[in-house]
Structure formats: structure tokens, C-alpha cells
Length: 102
Length: 224
Image (cartoon, rainbow over all chains, first blue to last red):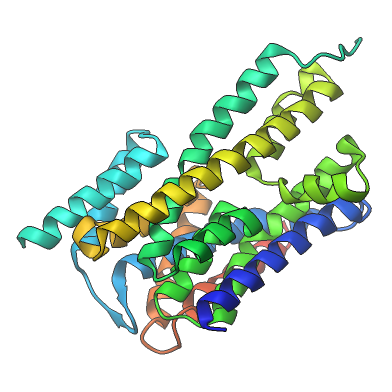
């Protein structure tokens, strides 16, 4: 099995295990305020890190290329409360334009 | 308050409109996953079996940019932790067992939990209906749109030429944006970006992302 297949299998098993565990254990577990708080913060750090790395990393090098333009356009679209699909499409369009013409 | 057994029209309407709008994001996932080097089959299996948007984007993002399988799985699983907490909140409401619990667990995501909680004023039955209709609805549309996005990206070829390589970080930005509700959230987001980029030249791909979970842990676990 290659990396992709391991990724698909491992992610799917772990995702379901977490969901099922939530339905099966008594409510008092994991209801500690610190765990609740950490649970709100983890997606913020991981998703932000993914934004940064997917935009500015090329393997192990840091670069500024057409993707940075796409990200800037996405941020502006979000600022103006554009819906998710519009944000993604505008980012793709602007990045593709820069990729072709600069 | 007497609970009517028929599902209120407004609950059905809320559930279906969330299902279609959120399901449509599946097109972005399908395209991103194929652009990251996953096959159409692998992409569709992720939507069918993992069925949790942020986790799916994370695993294809990490592996697609050269990270190992373990880094990808770990990042996706940390993002999926919240579904466990949603399950904890939903299980007393749904009172399921056996096969029905397996199904309920599988469709326990942001949207099904969110719609269920938003129906609180209409009573327990409306909350339950909101959970089931939204969960199944998102599942159906998410998978259909994933397939469409995957085939679309496969037909396109070079991801950069179509801007798909920028669509992925834009999708992550769109996922994190609504979570940044306070100035301290925004500072945390900036710190995570800086840490991940700072580590990128020095450690294998994937690890800079997971490392930022420690920021969340340190801040979340400290005394309020």
C-alpha cells in the first residue's frame, strides 16, 4: 500500500472511532472546561498552519508565488462575507491568472 | 410544551438548505484531493468513510505536499477530535444503539450537530429530525459533489494552471475564518502560521502542521 492508501485507511478508521467513542462513553468524560477549550483551539492552529504551509512552502523551501495572490484574494473575499465556494473559485482564478501571465 | 410528532416544516427546510450548501463544498474537496495526487477512488472513499471535511482536506494537504502517512493521519485525527465531543453531546438526545448508533456516529459532524442544537426551541423531536436529516443530507450531497470535483480536476491536468494549488489554502482559510471570533484567536492563528513556516525548512513535511497543536494545548490547558 502506498502513502495515499495508508492515509485514506488510517484517517477513516480514526475518524469513525472518535465519532463512535463520543456516542458510547458517559457524558462526564471529556466535559472538563480545559478540554473543551483546547478542542476549540486545535482547529484554529492546525487550519492556520495548513493555510501558511500550503501557500508558502514548496517542499522544504519557503517561496512566494502565484498561490500567495490566490490567498490574498480569498482573504479579501472572506472579509466581504463571500460564501465558501465563491472564496475558493476566486482564489483559484486569480492564482491561475498570475501563473499564466507573470 | 407538547412535542408534536410530525417534524416541523422549518426544521426540514433548515436541514435541507444546510445539506445542499455544505454538500456543494465537496466539489472543492474532490478537486483538491485529485490535485494533491490522490486517485478518484481514494478521493471518493475519503468522503464516504472519513466524512469530515476539515480532516479530509488535512490528510490530502499534508500527504500531497510530501508529508508521510502518519503526519497526514495525525493531523486529520486531531481535527476530527471535535466530532467525538459532538457525539458526547448528541448521544443523550438520540438514544441510539446497535446499527443505528453506527449510522448516527458516522454522520456526527459540525453541521448535523449544529442544526440539531439550533432546533432546541422546537423540542426534542425537532432536534432529532434536524440531526438525522442534516447528517444524511450532507452525506449524500458531499459525496455526489466530491465525485464531480474529482472528475473535474482529473480532466483539468496541471493543478497550478487552473489555480487548484491556491484553492486548497483558500479552502483552509475559509474553514478557519469563522472560528476566529476574538483578537486572541487571531493572534493564535498568526502564531501557528509563523511556527509552521519557521519549522518548514528544518523538519519533514507534515510535522510543522502537527507541531502547532502544541500551541493550542499549552493555551487551552493553562489556568483561565
